[in-house]
Amino acid sequence: MTNANPSHCIAVIGGAVAGAEVAGKLAESGCEVVVFEQNRRPYGKIEDGLPRWHVALRNKEYASIGERLTMPGVHFVPLTRIGEDVGFRDLIDDWGFSGVVLANGAWRDRSLPVEGADDYIGKGLIYQNPFIIWFNHLNDPSYDGPTFEPQDGAIVVGGGLASIDVAKVLMLETTRAALKKRGIEVDMVELEVKGIPKTLAKHDLVFEDLGLEGCTIYYRRRQEDMPLVEIPEDASAEREQKVRGSRRKVLDKATEKYRFNIEELCMPDELIVEGDRLVGLKFRRTRAEDGRVIATDETFDVRGSCVISSIGSIPLPIEGIPTKGELFAFTDWELGRLEGFPSVFSAGNIVTGKGNIIASRKHARRVTETMIESFLGVGSGDRANPTNTAREGAIEAADQIAKAIMKQPPITPKALATIRTRVANRQKQVGYTDFETWIKESPAS
Ligand SMILES: Cc1cc2nc3c(=O)[nH]c(=O)nc-3n(C[C@H](O)[C@H](O)[C@H](O)COP(=O)(O)OP(=O)(O)OC[C@H]3O[C@@H](n4cnc5c(N)ncnc54)[C@H](O)[C@@H]3O)c2cc1C
Image (tube, rainbow, N blue to C red):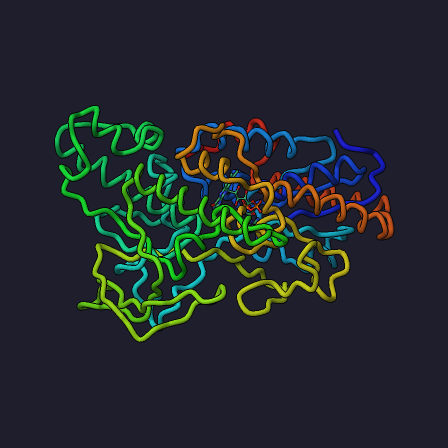
């Protein structure tokens, strides 16, 4: 069912948390909305970035996205990549949308900052996004992307929540493999919930019995600087100290429960290569001084089964959208506005640009130690209900986007009819009829 006389017709690029939230808000404000999603399923980082042990959280987020994409006035157009199947400029110039909202997330791994590193992708170097996508889909028969075999002693370069997820995947999978060799099968989700030491104790084992050294996260700052629990911008010195203490506490619990290691104050400096493979990294010791990272003269070599780089995700470029360095050239970061495109706005990870929704300082107050602990599996809180700051950011943005869009001239009946015909044609072309049937027929991970 659609509103016969919508005021405006808006294209949203990306149908996950932010895109669905904005689409729902705009539809409530009287707009017609067309959500273009490159994939079959519209769940973005919830399906491919959030490790699959978050069963309840994922299902809840899937339901919430589905609810919004089936609202009256919202059209879903899957398997349509903007920049490839439909040009970005065409949405405005040719299709005639009143506005465009970029909600396409951050899917490109920031490059490991060591010269020549990318020559070893697939030859000892792994990036976090494909690694977690593989992990989330490893039981999915239709998955055809790169595959990985987690091995003991991996080097993880990073320092945010996502790098802890990578370390947990490595520890859970290598522990399961070691137990399997002893004829013991453990379920991955159960192992994540109970933790490694408790699970082993049930089999009269301790971690050392497995002969695993564990993976190590190499972080350029101190553990207490890790941006897990954010320090509010106006925090007193005392409050800041407390937050730093909380960060250490959270990390201690996580390393104890999942048995990974953290080496602080070091950054990758050189590659260690043997034949055509990356076999390790030379690290440079750093010092923390007034919030800055200072490189020292001390270096040390580390060899590992592989190097996994987890230093942040940035948006993939879309042809026609101006960029500045590795990010889109936003002139206003609150609403992701682009110079020369008065009717283009942005929401979600694409504006925070980090792929880690908890990194936004703006929402610092909402992300407490309790939330982070339960999210990481080391607390007693409700794991299905942590704060999703991508959604909160999108809700805030959607109100302002709706206000700005209302100032644009309303859509004419003719322009609306043209868009509706094009949407119907594209949906037909990709074989889409309705959301429920489509999702039912699209394999989940
Ligand atoms: C408590 C909590 C903690 C979390 N922690 C993390 C974390 O640490 N790390 C993490 O990665 N995630 C984390 N998540 C997942 C988090 O939900 C996502 O980061 C967030 O949902 C991002 O939403 P988004 O809609 O901005 O982007 P995405 O989920 O990335 O969605 C973007 C969508 O746009 C589509 N798209 C991209 N390009 C195009 C194009 N050209 N044309 C059409 N479609 C396109 C994509 O296919 C995708 O569906 C966490 C979630 C929760 C609830």
